[in-house]
Amino acid sequence: MGYNQKMFGLGSKRSIIREIFEYSKARAAEIGAENVFDFSLGNPNVPAPAEVNDTIRELLATENSVLLHGYTSAQGDAGVRKVIADRINEKFGVGISPNLIYMTCGAAASLSICLKAVIEEGEGDECIVFAPFFTEYRVFIENAGGKIVVSQPEEKTFQVDIADFESKITPSTKAVIVNSPNNPSGVVYSEDTVKALCEVLDRKSREYGKVIYLIADEPYRELVYSNVKVPYLMNYYKNTLVCYSFSKSLSLPGERIGYIAVSPTMEDGSNIYLAVCGAGRSLGYVCAPSLFQQVIARCIDAKVNIEAYRENRDLLYNNLTAYGYECVKPDGAFYLFVKALEDDAYAFYERAKAHEILVVPCDDFGVKGYVRIAYCTSHDTVVGALPAFEALAKEYKR
Ligand code: PLP
Image 1 (tube, rainbow, N blue to C red):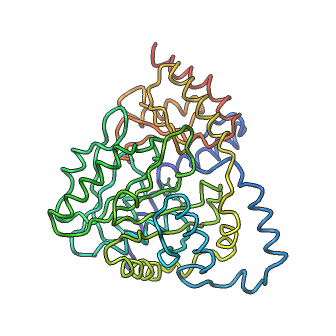
Image 2 (cartoon, helix red, strand yellow):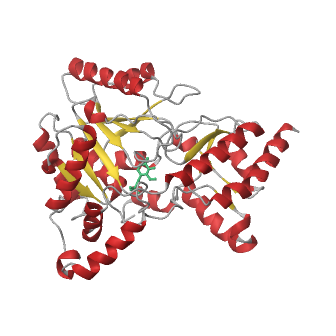
Image 3 (cartoon, rainbow, N blue to C red):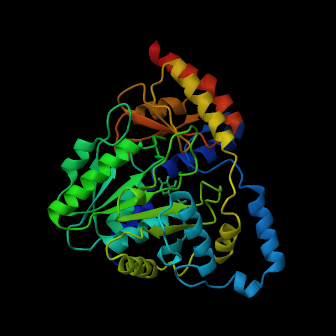
């Protein structure tokens, strides 16, 4: 047909989330945005901290414009990487050097690059993900030439089911992606879960005489609502790559900025880092946005107002469970994973839509019968949606 049909397939079949987002815009034009309760997209409604905008203005006023807007080295500005390495060391004590930090265009790029760096195309390499999982993992893994393998979670808690995980590891397992706090469940994997998972990985790596890479996808690390600890995986498993992003932690999703950190304990670590550089090159990333590298270096300690998310979470969780919905109380990220009130999550989504509530049916996330509510919306949207959620639950009880 003269062009790549796989790519055509990806481009022409929009993700369900994008589909709903487009519907929401059209519906808002018809009945007014205040009457549509759109919980489809993980696009933060909380603004970036004021110091981010102040820093941008200051950089534009004071820095050399040619340098500020120019290419940086492919792995990122050396000063910026030092700031990031220093902060990681302060917080987690891993002793990482700036030479193991690679600046990226957000977590999606970090993941694509890490997968490309470790997966050997044509070798049958498998990558395990834990359901429910961010649907783009499938795209990134397959694009790197790997095969996705899904491990099912523990029922009710949505923690990793260690026995299921172990049963999914084969001599072809090359990598495992862990996302905590999790999209779409909001669950933070406990330290016990992490320790058990890493013990299995260590044992299986030894048994098969090969490295299995652990890829920590961490765009939500900073978004936690209780005193739960989010274990830093490098401290539990030596062959870890961390994919970090400022999209959610600083509400900068459109600016495309994040990084990869290669564990200092990684086997053959400096070569893995070079493979990361090569993967970034082959994917055409060139370098991460220069202006935002500088912003990050100056705003590394800035924080978004996470109280706004906490209020939305509490209001939704307390009311929905009172109306009869079932869900785990999320400790982090800004998603509520709710059991649909009928087996078919898609049919439930349609019935919610009739009440102007837009949620995401999660079959593609690897768990059937659930929907995701992204509560990174305005507080008014949550308040406005509650009567509609109640009416929907009553409709099912009738
Ligand atoms: N990983 C997960 C689990 C996500 O939820 C997202 C975005 O929603 C990403 C990665 C991609 O984030 P980024 O905007 O940093 O590319």
